[in-house]
Amino acid sequence: MIAPDRVAFSLFGLDVMWYGLLIGIGFMLAAFISSARAKRHGIDPDFILDLIIFMVPSAIIGARAYYVFFSWDQYAGDWSKILDIRSGGLAIHGGLILCFTVAYIICHHKKISFLNTADLCVPVVALGQSIGRWGNFFNEEAHGGPTDLPWAQIIDGIGYHPTFLYESLWCFGLFWLLSWIDKNHRKFNGQITCLYGILYSVERFFVEGLRTDSLMIGPLRQAQVISLTIIAGCAVLYYILNRKHNNEKETL
Figure 1 (cartoon, rainbow, N blue to C red):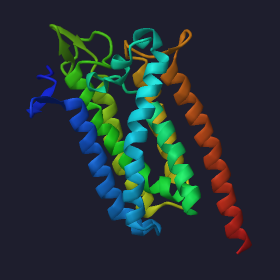
Figure 2: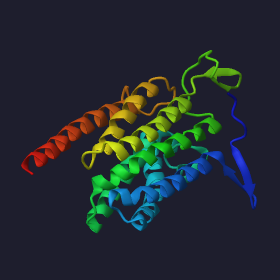
Figure 3: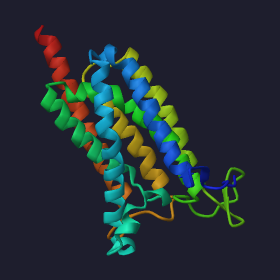
Figure 4: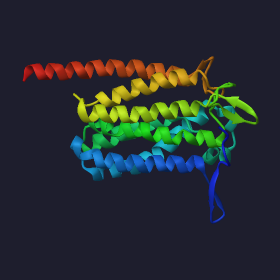
């Protein structure tokens, strides 16, 4: 696979990058699908649209701030470079952390169940990640080490593990799996959210080990540390919520 020009098209003299375009498409699909599924969760579709308005800037700000924080040596003292997200440099964990935080605050303020809202939204979060990861392909970034596999990403004549593709395919499958579980087998609020945290983090832990541009926490890959933390946290939360649900059923 060889990436074409990272510029999708030009509009009024401004280059529109594939990176930003794909992220935008992901957000639009997330808004449409979440709104369509909202009533199944007993949530007003208009609330989801209102929530998306806050999620878009939260995702971008959180992802960029996280990336810059762990790559400070590259950005120190250069604000124009910090703000230049069109050239890449967004960390999904940072975007997720800020989005979940902002969503919790909004749901608490509106007296709407945060876990129920999160269960509605996380399948399309996975879909957005699946689409957005292709921005890394066009930017020729976030790839793995050299490989001669037939599906390798070719950069300057050298083949690399297309880690963007591995994550994109996993997240696309995760979208369908979580949507199916949410529709047919969800037992308690928070179930889909916990499964998303566990299943996405398992994939991210292994794929991160292939990458050559990982952000680091000392000698460790930060995404792997965060992934293990999320797996453990979501597994404990799943157990607590499931036990609470079963106890409530027994008392009825």
